[in-house]
Each structure stands twice: as C-alpha cells, then as structure tokens.
Image (tube, rainbow, N blue to C red; front, side, top):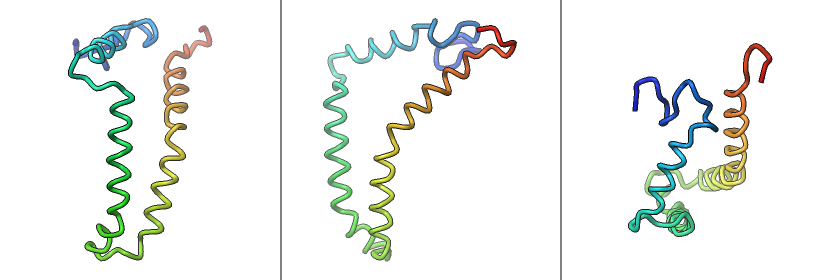
Length: 104
C-alpha cells in the first residue's frame, strides 16, 4: 500500500469506486479458519453477558460497589446508542464525497 493510500483506498478514487478493501474483507471471510459474523457475534454476546454477571464482584474488589447501578446504566445506554455509530459513519463518508466547488 502506498503512503498516500488510506485503508487501501487511493486518494484519487472515491471510497465507493475502490473495491480493494471490500475484496480484501470478503477474502478474509472466505478463509476456512475465519468464524462467520454470526458466530463471532454470538461469542462476543456470551462473553459480554458473563463479564456483566461478574460486574458486582469486580466492583466490590475495586471498592466501587456503589457504582454498580451507574455502570450498568452506562452499559445499557452504550448498547442502545451503538447503531447510531454506523449511521454516523455513513454520513461522514458521504461528506468526504462532497465536491467543495458544489459540483457532485
């Protein structure tokens, strides 16, 4: 990758026109040792639930038992807001495509 490329995308081509990163991602997913996105999601969800179940004990050991409700509320809020991250990224990338001269 050249020093002028970012994430495998040439600066002279829009990110939608350069399919290199997409092709690289698809090849990675085709690798037999790669878990499917569904498997990976399930594993991460199971891991997260196990850690959340241990949270009261983790906070107690650290002397922060009184913070449990606040931490739990923050976890719930982060999970609720996560989908907006993808929407924000979408509009950010669209902004990169805007021609400052007003010509699309």
